[in-house]
Length: 150
Image (cartoon, rainbow, N blue to C red; front, side, top):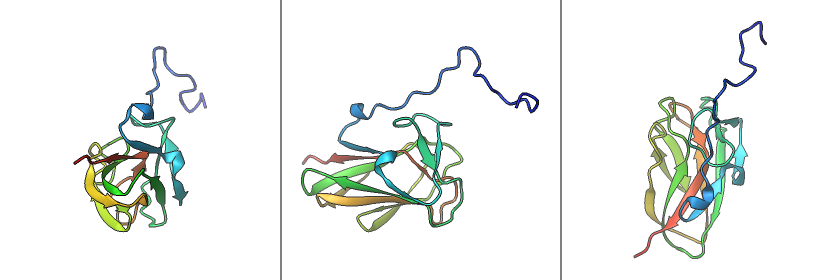
């Protein structure tokens, strides 16, 4: 490794990015580890901020097989808004498909996560993030769900 000029020690003063504390986020927060993942997701810490110890990306494969299903339980059926959590970056997809209880929207992962909704949702529902038709890396780090107060 040294012959290849690879870094084997971190430079003095290097500080690893710290994760986002899920306890400081409003509402219900699921981490990527809470999802059922299908396909070839790859762990990373290259971009920040991120929730927990890492986030996952699809390797820019667009294979239509890579998806993450988050099963969300809320206290009662009602109006909620949600957002997919991920570290934004210019190499991300601008058209990542997110399916919420059967309805698909597209999100721009080049920018910070925007709220989706309000949506009328049952006590239990699924949020699926996939890579079908995506035009860049698809990244998952978690899902945040907040009740909309009237």
